[in-house]
Length: 238
Image (cartoon, rainbow, N blue to C red; front, side, top):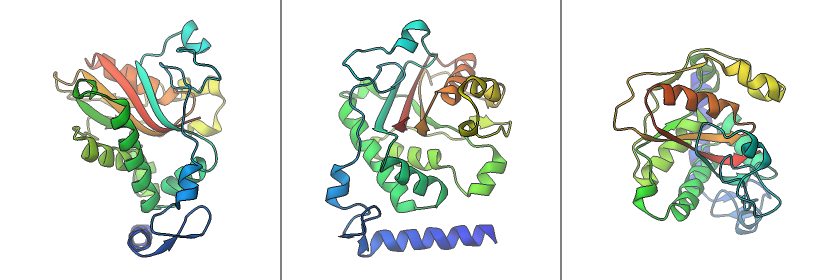
């Protein structure tokens, strides 16, 4: 029953994407999922820490937290600030099976990342989306990070792999835990198997980055598996 409901919702999303529609945010008639006015209101991330991607009020390169202790990953590239209306768009893509919104976010990530990465030398060997536990994947019907990664991989011509990293512990959702408990919550949650030796530069794909505990733990697992460099690309930074 859940599977058939997902198919119906997916079909409706595709129809809404192809046919004349209203802007998802303001309701005005629009050829696209968002009208031009709402597109211009999106909160792109400007000044941010060059290591963890956290928004900064000045043009400093590194935030105070990273000066005290650098994360294991090398760099975070986030496109948006996690605030209205981006938070509403991501919620729709993540929990409401709005494939049109998910498609827009993936393509906008690809566009902005292509601008930021000036040469092919900056491209990674592979994109790895942050995995969901199988039980949560069954409940949700799809992994939004995988879907974003599919679009980015296709648009930017980068190898995608969503099988070598797996989530083996169905941990409580990070959003309901205090920040100090998030890292302990994720210890031992991921495994990485059969990493090819030529995958030395890996990019993790996620929808939202908050404290960074999830990508930090996944980076630790990848480094232990032999990867030498891990970056993070996310749609929004909280």
